[in-house]
Amino acid sequence: MNIPKALLRKLLDISGLRSLNVLRNSEYLKSTGWFNSCKKRNAVDSSGNAIPWMPYPVITFIEKRLSKDMAVFEYGSGNSSIWLADRVGKVVSCEHDHKWHELVNKMIPENVHLVYRDLDSGEYIAEISKYRKEFDVIIIDGRERVKCVNNA
View 1: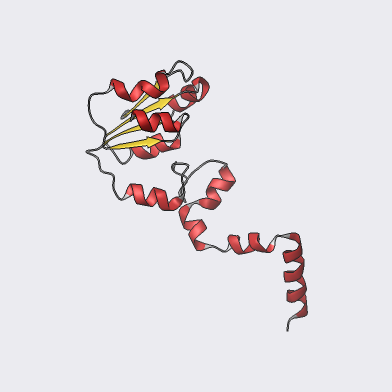
View 2: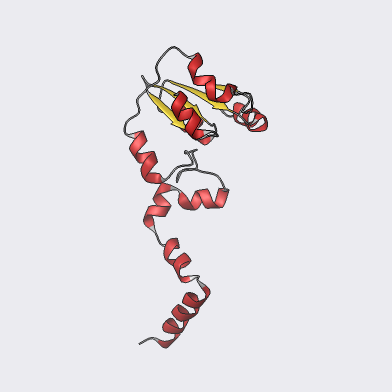
């Protein structure tokens, strides 16, 4: 038995750092961009491109079902808006935070229609009812989720 290695392993176990070392060697975390996301403090893939703030299996599940002829409505905006814009024809995104709306509005591509609606007045929840076209996908990743689901 290698005593220095065993001692190091024991010290890492006691300090709780052994699990971090195991994570460092994870190919899955490298390939999905998890390390990049931690480093940049932003949800990005392994190439640094924006991804939704969702579990990786959910992203994979959704991505396989999207196509350029689809329209998506989302409550909440950000990286998901940018990510969706690359995969579908149109994204309508409703945001309740005015400062965040202004920031995201500077980053979105042309096929994203970003709207600000006040949360307290009920405009935010009601936004989807202004559209006559049915959306292929509705993503609810914002406030008042239960009310948004009922309205959608």
